[in-house]
Length: 60
Image 1 (spheres, one colour):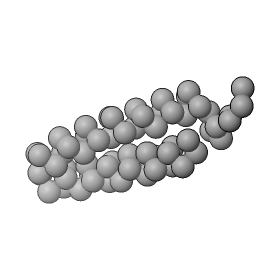
Image 2: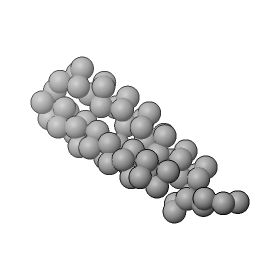
Image 3: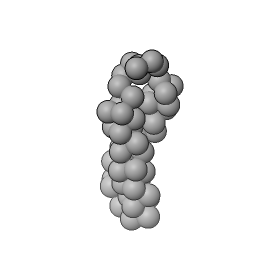
C-alpha cells in the first residue's frame, strides 16, 4: 500500500499541472479529463491514507 499511495499521489499532482496547462491553452476536453483524474485519483489517495495510514500498518 505504501507504493500505491505514492503512485496515486504523483498521478494526482501531475493531473493538477495538466489542468493548469489546459486552462492556459483553453482546451476544454483536456480540462474535463484532468479534473476528473484529479478528483478520482486524488480521492483514492486520500481514502488509502485514511484507511491504511501512512506509513501503513501491516498488522493490527
